[in-house]
Structure formats: C-alpha cells, structure tokens
Length: 123
Image 1 (tube, helix red, strand yellow):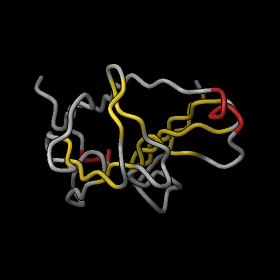
Image 2: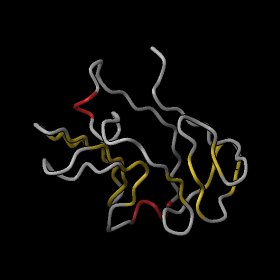
Image 3: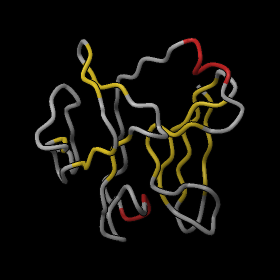
Image 4: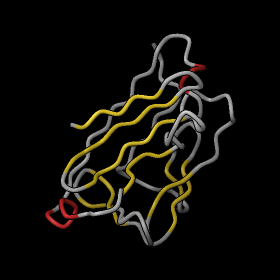
C-alpha cells in the first residue's frame, strides 16, 4: 500500500520539506546527521490538510492507520513538564479528532481520536 503522506527530513528546499503535502519550515531549522533538528517553539514544520484527511480524522481511514518515524531525544527532552509535540493534528478528546505524538515527563505518548472513540498509549 502506498502511503498517503510521507516526508524525508534529510534535506530542505526553500524552507520546505518536500512531501505530500509539502511541510513549511518555521525558524532556522538545521539538518544534522540523518535528520533535522526542531525545538517545537522557534523551529517546527507545519502544513494544512483537508478536514476529511486520515491525519485529521482517523475514522476516515477505511484501510486502517499506521504512522512510522525515527526520532532522537536529548537529555533535556526527558524533563518536559508540559507536552512537547512531535506530530499533532488534534487528538485531545472525543470532541476533537486526529493524531498526537508527544513527549511528557520522559515518556512518549501516542493519541488517536475518532468521532466514536479515543486511544492513548504510553511507550
């Protein structure tokens, strides 16, 4: 199965990460090793997706949902007392739909919310 969305964080072009759709880079993002450095405040990547997109509403994913990524955290990341988002399209409650991946108190969390159900997993 071909992915609906995919991005490679090993190069950028005109403050964009090529992909489907392109991600707009905010701030002075740095490429280091085999990835890109983001602090989530002054440097981040963002895009807009249609409301019926699987990332916006996982309940629309008729063939299921899969997300894969390789991330590396430094020691400071382990002390975050507020969620620091890696991916976020709005999974907060049954009132919102989407996917959220974040780090909090040294733990990695994955949340997925549809119109009928919400899940939260700690890695």
